[in-house]
Length: 637
Image (cartoon, rainbow, N blue to C red; front, side, top):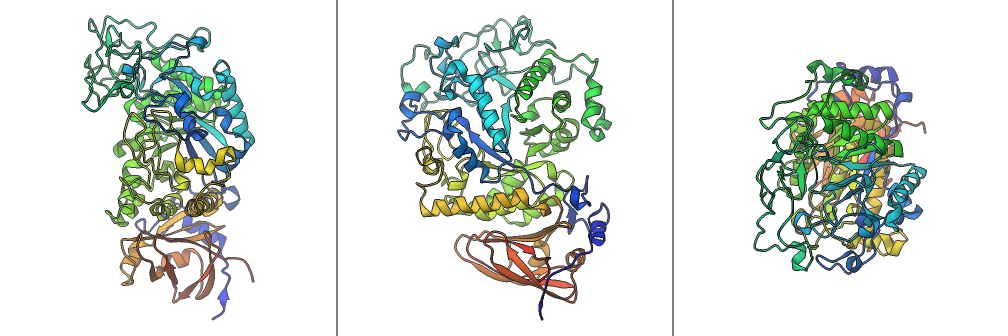
């Protein structure tokens, strides 16, 4: 038979994609069921791609890497390292948004008193460079990141402008649940008061207090484990096992003891959002029907209502950054803050920038829908469900069927669930403690990036197989340090002395980088990824072929583009099998019996789809850890 170039009835496909008109939900799920897209002209091209970069590590070319090393010994990256070459390299990964992690001024162990900044006490700072989640001044930026600390805010504003010039948007962290034990803003606008400045410290709780207290008691630093010494044992005038805080405040993770444990977030203090110590709320409850209302309605709900002082402080902070040109925020541990606050905060942000990108860290699946619908989050980490299951697949410990089940379970909110394989909290794929080989992330990245309408996030160094292999000081290997000054070796080879051209990469690293560029550019542009999803896994497991729980296959499609995606997770050997396409998919694609040309969007190689008696078949051959992304050719010969 001659290979055909398919024709498609737009009306027929539109009807199939419309809510309630698709095949059975366990087989074909409209990927955006809450807002199905049936007008091809109205569909955006592809999906957002977020590039998370740990800002102080990105541009550092120093290779000393002394554990607990100082900035002078180990070096530090700067805002200015994100020059045109660097930003072009980030953009080449399909990036639409850069999350500059660690920008707000947090506690650091370096003397900046010449700039009016108080010294931080190493007894309540993790690492020498400090945790980015112990914010000390929400109206300024980390002085380590500036060429001239006196002009640090202006240097960050210049970075915002450069990022925008390269067609990407800027995200920064907001950490509402906790701040550094010594919060002290030098850059706050006139009339703004620091957190805690007006608190009544004689009581454990008051609605308009910013912190919780243990009245009449002094804070005590944790008891250190036997294998831990502050700053690795290096002498420091403030490293004396003491920190003056009277009365003691609750610790960031909610610990109420005057002496938190080493495993507590002892470097931070818990913020009070009007939640009484017994867990009851001291503010207006958001009516349940607001889950179906837009941000404008939420904004109007809060007008004229009294809210806790902390809410107002954070509203002013995010609007300050929004006015500066920041395009959105990543919210740390959002689930530890009541959903009503998020309704209040996010509706105020959307009032100023309706296109703001709002991403939250929520790890309890039963809360997902509340934080999306009532809290007005655009996106949540899909960590506990999708990432955790995909990690097991990469490690050879879990079945791919679990991914199909999760995708079905998330069908109503999947467009809000951000996918990732790495971030600053998680182990590097190449770390022995995870997969031990960055190539094992390749089939997983194809699945993660293409299975849903959700945005995809990459962590810097992931694209070249960075293993996070050394102990930098505070914390252990397998995660690139977020606490100390460090050079990131594989990433430094891509930097190539500041050229940002990959010139020092090994052939294997260069091949991996090219794979990520090809895949992520495709995901950022492919219109089918905003269309329908049809899992092919169940049909092919039942087909009696070599297809197994080490493979995952699915279709993504809309009027403009039809894709078949197959990934193979076996790291030792390849596989050949006949991929079966069920009749409902063939009907949805409006294909008659015959042969149709397919082209792999990762390699450019071609294959063919054979349709017989209303069902489809593709002969698939994959190398170990291989994937294909076949696009149906609908053009005339």
